[in-house]
Amino acid sequence: MFGLIKSITNLANTWITSKSEKSKAKQALELAEIDKKKEIILSLQKNTHEWELNSLQDKDKWLRRLSFLMFSSPFLIAIFAPEHVSHYFEVALQEVPVWWQKSYMAMTGGIWGIASLKNIIPEIIDVVKK
Image (tube, rainbow, N blue to C red; front, side, top):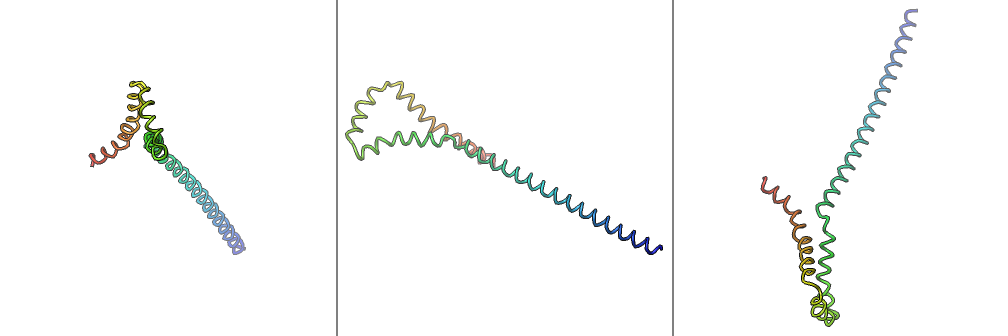
């Protein structure tokens, strides 16, 4: 009789232990999934953050390209139609007020000069700190 009770008790203990281990394994798997999801989300936020920083670092790139194209266009046109370019420099620029020319040059200087300095200054500071 005691042998039968002992066998049933051992069987119940084995079943309970097995059930407990399965529950712990399932819980560990759920925690691992949550940790992995958290890691992916943080990685995405980091990549987005890096992309935003890179875009802010050189946000005036298209302004520089556009102004370069505007300054280069007379030279490119001069290859195919030199008379139009000479007319542009002789007549059109004489009609533009001096204040407008200076304002335009100041804006272009800001795009090419000051905007480029803001990208270089952090690098200079890093070198000085070292």
